[in-house]
Length: 101
Length: 147
Image (cartoon, rainbow over all chains, first blue to last red; front, side, top):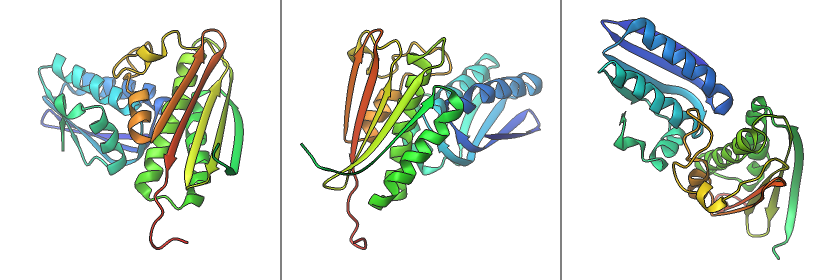
């Protein structure tokens, strides 16, 4: 699991690559928390384009990032969702809570 | 009783580092049924959920044994069983409900819902203090080009 980020004009783009499962999720959540705390973005874009696998651990990661952004009165958008990860997010009905593009 | 034409069995310690291995091994075995990428993705996801449940819930404060058995049954059916000897589930019906979790913030409570949605059949047998056996079946649709 790999995470990279870019911060510009209070917009934070976090790019994920590799396999997002329970093993990877805990470390990833902490990294995303730190990244948001350091950059205090108004908008965070979670780019899933590099994910080769995601299970329901990804749901918890997205919901936690959304809570962190809500606490800053900011927004979260999830983009470039691969087909397999999209099926997981759709099954959870996550589109009701998070902007999935 | 449906006839088994092939099977694999493997055992591992309930460390989260083994989650990737478990779903990968089942996916490699399932490949002989000539699944589509989407079918293979569904199988990997369901296996990942079952194995993660065993790691997180069966052995919360200890490490224990998990055994995965994958079978090919007549009719192009893959059957996967994930078995643990951990603490068991007190109320299976409640555990299968969407969003129910005892796993804290890093779990979403969607594991069983995903297993049910991504596979054709899901059976959960559990006894407190004895362990849990999750069995899932998925029929792989024969493709016109395959023999």
